[in-house]
Image 1 (cartoon, rainbow, N blue to C red):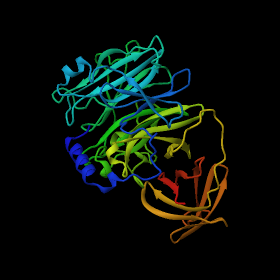
Image 2: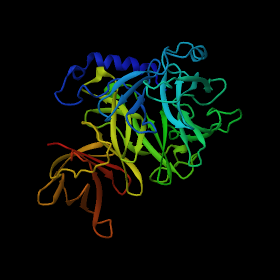
Image 3: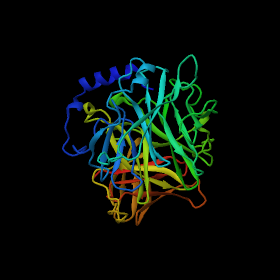
Image 4: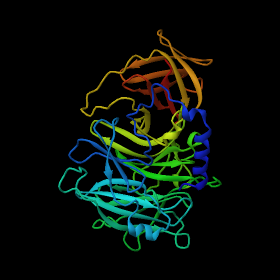
Length: 432
């Protein structure tokens, strides 16, 4: 859900911020996709290019061969909003937060239609045999209503749909925002719609007393025996003041309970941080994921303080599974990506770094050529073992007297990321 005042605030900030007019010489380059909120990505079953679908009139579609250069290839609907949905939600001018999945040989695109601050919302479904506009079979068929909400009939909001097919090939739909949080239900395997009398399960909400109870954008990924539920918290759309962030929990069962790193249920406000504002990035959130045999990427959107007038910028970040399987992400891609599976040895990491814990409290870290690590008054040692940075800090609370942090070194050597023993994200970017 997006509130009207956030749109007003964005306009005021963009009009009055000197930084909004700045044009730094390096990042983001013009090839980065601007104005792509709520991206949903998929690679066709036969491989090849990746497609991204975003919020906007008719559901804009973009294509990329390298996750870096993107070209618009059209839109799902010729009209801004399908006639049935516009009739159901008067005043709607665009389509929100699509999700795309392959199921039983058809690409299923779920989409939401609503208006700002309203609980009167609908989720629809469109299908296609192919994603290639040049294919003779390319045609989007709108199959209409899947789910609806209204303040007099439901306690949830029917936006931000996300489909997931479980290990037994059963389809489920996750959705929701604010109000009583996020929901999920099993879909009819024949129609991929909600059957009458479906059992709706409460999946995630904010902790009691959180005001507003800002939660939305569910997205589920299956990885090595667990279903991981990604959601977004807080304010998505206030430009440089955006507080949007991504948190995660996991479950052995598709309908939960989803627990965070510390064992707290997401249905009671739990959530382990994945990504939040840092440096010049603000309000990263509403993610999807691209998982392939050659790597995993988290795809989302957020503001860059030097480019506020360009709205939310598409971010594609490598996703790594660390410790006993908790996801973290690196820096947003700044060069074309390879899909051929070749591994490269990261650059040497000795030098000066900016370091955050859970993306707050920026600190300066020095990794000396002599293997000494200095973080303020804290000293330790470091070793680079292939693509892993092993940091060791003095810690009398541990049996060995040392606390180790093992971080993934990104291929370009410009970012290291991992988690400490409390499950907090340790995120570093080179300051050289």
